[in-house]
Image 1: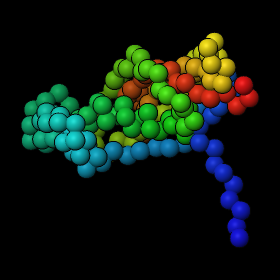
Image 2: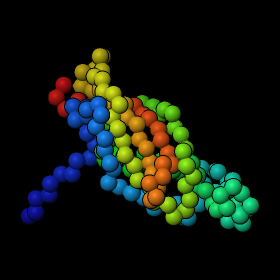
Image 3: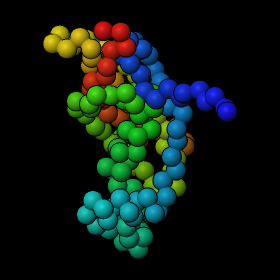
Length: 156
């Protein structure tokens, strides 16, 4: 029988410190299929996201990846380090698309811990506030957002 070591997935409140920065290990190259499926599922049929002929005469000259797909993917890239043990994501703030994302771009992200505070009413949990910045393969910033995550305390 083989012993398997458990992989950490998320952190307890006690493991977050203001100023910590997590360089998330996961990366994601966005494919045309990713963008098409997300566009169809979310009913966003704008030709900027789906029509290669239409975009030839537009600002970037190529298909733009749907912004909410970029946001969703980047949140996903952070889960193992930030919210894997979350009780709840309490809110997302100041979401800013700072650069275009195209099919074939590979995204990666880093997150900084901005604030930690224990719950006054429930001592078994606390709120962690973080800021995440995402980059493409050329290290150009493409997305920035903050969020508050409710996480359990390891030792209440």
